[in-house]
Length: 181
Image (cartoon, rainbow, N blue to C red; front, side, top):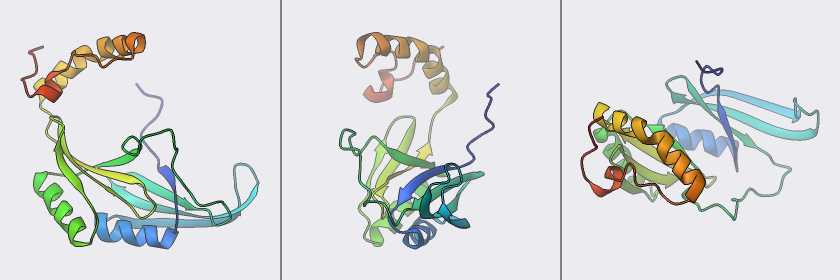
């Protein structure tokens, strides 16, 4: 059993707290849960005013942001590709995924996808602070899950030794059926 009981919240930096709350409410229907403003960082005591906002991401999950007006403008890690760091949210079904894509595009937001990842379908776009957002609709079957579970350690151990993509679950990308396990 895991020591942790779930994600209390995940926190990212944003450029503008009010704009962020309004954007997530408008485009992803997230409720505004809480705002905390301080002049000092509670954990370190360092003087650094901030606005900390919390949004309801569904399922008991909270997405939080900090606006830090005294810090240099936020940027990206130049050594990490833009597609790597992202926030992925689950949606109920493909109809919701397609409707949300249309709603975002109608609002002038550029959307990639849906992309078929075999296990789920996703769309990708950016929030006003430049965070990459993914909306995903699960389509994983029990057979797929069993097949992936059976090879996860072999794949990880091979990767650790070779740093090359293991082929144990090639079916995820080549369109073939998962093996019976």
